[in-house]
Image 1 (tube, rainbow, N blue to C red):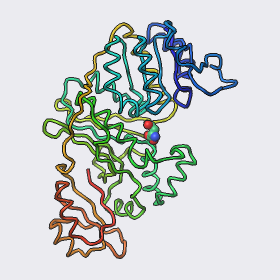
Image 2 (image 1 turned 180 degrees about the vertical axis):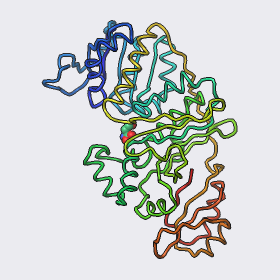
Image 3 (image 1 turned 90 degrees about the vertical axis):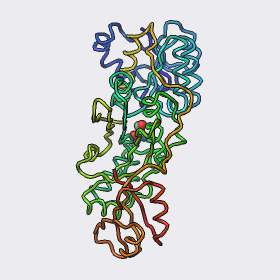
Image 4 (image 1 turned 180 degrees about the horizontal axis):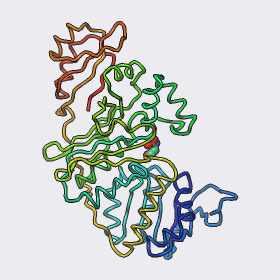
Length: 398
Ligand code: HSE
């Protein structure tokens, strides 16, 4: 079966590489060879092993009936959305690694794929090489998924791990992450939590069976985490991790992206460096966790190639997937319950007066105190915190 790749950047070239290197194995597993016929990119790649397959006009692929499998690794919503739509309407299966596209247009593209009796798959859009999408769509389908909590951004996990291990400041670690190529030149999407937000929006849409708008998810990044916060975390025997969380709240889900303090007994505590992991609790299954490389050329391309084989095996059939376009109203974040770690220059007496129950953490920092509250609803936290004069930082506990 013939395939095309749209976007010959890091992931797209990784897909081509896997199709070359694992050609025989892929033929064995798919039952048929997957032959790369075109690569769509506006750039030239002189000397590249796939150079002769490069085309600049998307319609060359759209109009070629031989091509039945298409990979989208361009990134961004446009023109990826327009191109993917054209491919599905032309009766071609599409797999994408593009979380921005899936979070924004996933429900619609799944419907268009169904109408055209093809598939739109997106394993690589969350957790890179970790097969979390197929696990939720194909394996855990007999369970009510009560909670999904993930470390789904490799850049920020690397940065927080470095800050923890070396005591370094946020800005220094960011520069180092950029120098090593983990963080992008413009790191906003990672460090402000937007990337993790889109990923948890996708996972929540899948388990809820309908569209979750990422704009509705309260999202906090890691830019306000300092070396002093890390000292407190260590003094409390905990680690700070950027979590993307979603949990059943009545007849809907409540979601949040924020840094959390985790104790060593937490399943995500040991997930360090650029690794990702997703913890899933099912009402029958109980607890489960999926761990691996959440980013990078070959791990992400591996997930794309897995989708290509899945699509080849279901070439004449749409694999049913429930993701309605109607928007899900998420639970009110003010109703969520947490414990909170707070740093303030207020006295211990003022803290006790405001919060009653408080567990003080001594990190040897002069001129301020750090404490952990009891379990509080977010709205009650907001009321009580107004009584403290100078709040330096707040981090939730999970
Ligand atoms: N910027 C993302 C990360 C890439 O750091 O995890 C994978 O989506």
